[in-house]
Image (cartoon, rainbow, N blue to C red; front, top):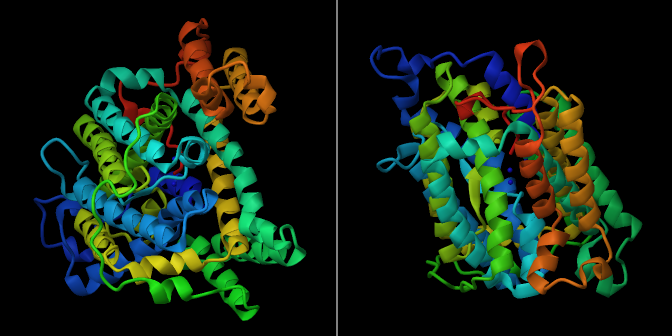
Length: 480
């Protein structure tokens, strides 16, 4: 649930025009381009390009959660550092594979924005250990989901996934506005909501949109990163940046397991598992887009199953070390399309570099120096793209009366409970109240149940409401 300013466009490109094999691969007619490695002098800069395209999206979720619960600068740095390490490990697992785990496709892994919608309230209510306890269990559920993908995926057609993705984006938008206004610490200082905060956030948005829509090549793919850099430079010029956290951070540090602990709270387990299942369906879309780009055909059932299981392993592994849940990053599909190099070993090299960089706390500490207003402008674009992706997935269905009713009831319950006063859920236990107020849980449950029980309509010989075939690869491709 990542980040995602190019996702919708790259998904269309991936379906329309598979990449041609790179010239470096011409000498081998027996091996797939995915399994060929270009010379290191070319592979290294391509790997760096993959890193730059996903780095902000990977660092932002732990940074947002840490600041939302008031973590100290050192703990925030550690959260970002752990995200880098676990994402690097999971990328290697996804691209190189280990037995049945891993798609062995050029897929980059990173921390998911989708989980923020429940991770923030869970952390505020039960503590950060409850988030990691829920993620630890959810990762194993994803592994089981991947193994039984052929049967279970029918419960999550594009219509259901689209509703969940849309609710996630809507739920996150107030957080982005809060950051654009200066964030909670700025509120205590008396300048929360000041115009200069909104001005910097607006600058980040303007640069991001301009680069994404009018830039070419890497300029378009890395539009969020460029917007952040411009906003950061302007904020620094006005004295809004402190590098104290970077100065205090160590050069080398190896993290230890269970630094933040694990707390198994039922509400956290249920909420995060539901997001993990929806995220698995998003990963199927990303794997399908990458496969069509790389080899011109949909991935096999084994590749889809292995890819989802790698997601789950990464999520559980991350929980042990204190990293947010992992998922596939669709913006890196755009890098594959732009470069035309589809080697999974190039992406594996990017994962290796990310893993090594994670052991340098000074590098991770830099992200904790980003002012709230700068981060707010960037994540507003990212969160809004999550919601837009949900609309895109819903729009892939034929919206007959049945589908419209499912969307209407699910959105009504999800949005209604998300922004309802606390008195609405006061009669329930704390766990149930948290699940209801997340909005995502009631929206998903209603969408799944209604999709299962309402009579299907099939005009022109097609069952649009079912929204899925026996092959999950045929489903719509939601954006990360």
